[in-house]
Image 1 (tube, rainbow, N blue to C red):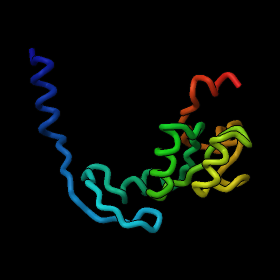
Image 2: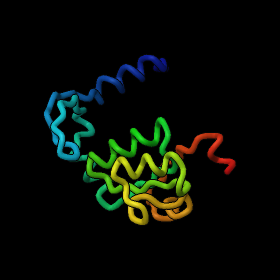
Image 3: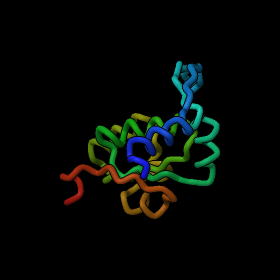
Length: 125
């Protein structure tokens, strides 16, 4: 019987991702990145080309992930309570009310992929 460790090592040696250093343009800004060979930017674009990712919440995690995804070319929709601090921050970051910035309910309905990153406190409102 093969041990769990042996199986894991065998699997690891057959699926090693290589990394490369590249300069890519994100939202008009050139950035030097370390790109994994198994998920280059072109593959991410292809995987999500027909999707709308709805980000519910725009706090510590939501903001960074939403901006990163948008800059990577993924169609994004942000779902927040209108008029709150996060709503105002999202507008400052370039999200457009009624288009890419909508209510939580509308964003959930629009998304083919939904990222639920509302804070515990925000969920009860």
